[in-house]
Amino acid sequence: MTTMEMVGAPVEWWKGQRGEWYVAIQVALFALIAFGPATAPWLPAWPAGVAALSKWLGVVLLVGGIGWIVTGGVQLAYGRSLSALPCAKASATLIDTGAFALVRHPMYCGGIWVAFGCGLWSHGPLTVGYAVVLTTFFAVKGSREERSLTERFPAYRDYQKRVRKLIPLPYRWPR
Image (cartoon, rainbow, N blue to C red; front, side):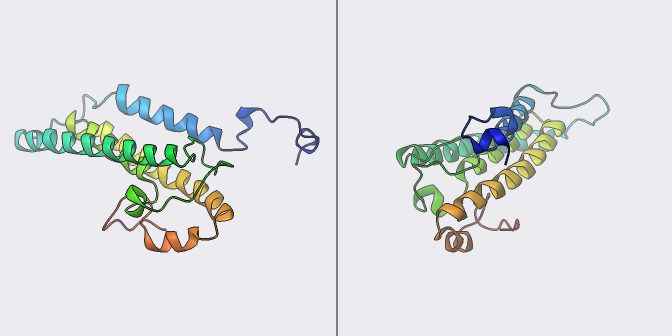
């Protein structure tokens, strides 16, 4: 602990005590997905049949992902737990119903679906690659957040055993 922290002085946001860097990286990844190059000249074009199917699948993932984000966000806001930072707010409550009964991080799940939806819709192999990076990032950010939630809510460990972390159903990422 630094001297500044010991005397109760505020810590600068950029020191990342509450995970501020995670938010900055998350914003940068979403900006890359939305505005970055979708493909490169040396990458082959998608075959016509695959391109048509990927457009429709991309739209389904985009709409479904937005649904996950909105549903999770509303539930967190209603429970006074909504925060971009990967640490539990003082006013937070443990939510394990609704979207949270299907996946522990529905907003991250939605972000992943939106990212892959963008890649498929735009036929962008680079965008699909960005979505893979975002998925890995959310796994890491989610782990940090879950350490905070486990400290705050003893029942969180049982919740972790019952509900998947990022993607519902057959997904097998380390819990």
